[in-house]
Image (tube, rainbow, N blue to C red; front, top):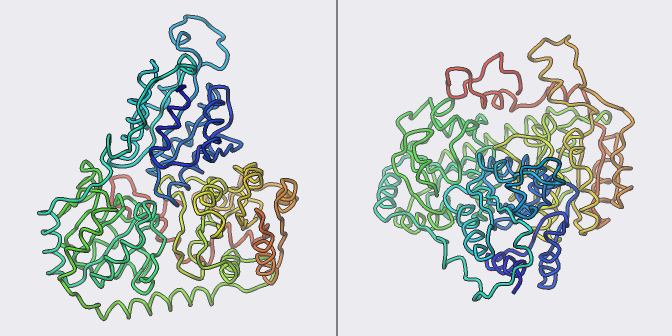
Length: 579
């Protein structure tokens, strides 16, 4: 067999059916072979976008991603996206093409499309390997998957020089992952027994659920544990999806109701969360009130993270896909009854949300960004995958969505803007066209990777992009004013009022809608969904509301995510602005 055939063997052994990357001579053979075998090849318009697509594909399938890049500038374009993958804990195998290895030691200048590439990935990738000799291909590719998927997930990088491109190999069939890496990992029996003991004595156990619970497709497992314990579920800012069947016991951490529940909890089971700044490390802000001596059970794959952000009483080290069902089985004998306070908290949550909905301005034009989210919610299918992106607009979408989505994500750890459109493409690749994928974003974010509309058209991905357009860096305008005063100048804070994203979409072959009034939103959404094509709905929103973030209930909480000098665990402060 040829080298590229063996690499495809190893990728398919991981049950991966998609390769993301722009064609390059290093990978022509690999691409042709992959297509022969029925795999999907998706070429975006920028390598960074491929990283975002891979992250979204992982979140919707639970499988690691494979992204390839051309030597030199293509690999360089990966770097920012690969850092995103590291921060978002996305297990991604990056394979970078490279010129013949002889160039590595040549003391010459002016080498075309050549740079020593591994060094750029060493500081943030879990593993960096170079296929120096053909016989190393199994060892290095398997090590890449082993490192990407073990412990805390993350990216790895493999350098693939043209020196080995045409090598012929005589190797046995590629082994399954279970033959060379750990694929199942339950927690120790004694630790589970201690966790059950804490839950047995608990007055109010609470699940604190982060994004990894959904990226691993563990919705049903989390729901079963929540029902077994008959307890409230607190969502982190990254774990904002809601498993079906536990809507009435699920609350957002940091809201008034969520904060009260955090204070009342006497045992917390943290699942799929690093216990980072947005939850105040499990120590500050809302946790510093009420039952401050509460016990903590942390389900975590990587033992080195246990106790890093706060002391832990019971560590359940293992894959949450295995540990959550394990804990559920062990806790089945507890026969807990639902706490009467859950119904009270559910009513309070719904009343608070409804009050904010009622207070949101209903004027026809310009459209308030909160009203935009409310109107979109009336139309999109309830099983839609929701992608959030953007600064101020993204925060409005987070609060004013009218239902609790089963799948909603954003880049909550890295906190950048711009991945939304590639995210939507990757999510649609992951779920197929039986479920709608709806991107809710702002114009500044959308423009980062607008060329990926062509990718969506080419690959027949009927994503719906709802873009709140204020012709400004909305959250940055707010930051200018918060930090320097309301009358400060805003250099480069605004751009042309003539931008028409609906026309941009049409130029790519997508469906476009232009909306100026509230009453136009729902019909535009219905037409977009009916088109069966990728669609962009350009909505002119109120720039004053968006820039000043008026009527946004969660701004004060958002500001507490950023610790002050001296690390007061995210108490927030007047000099922290919105950034």
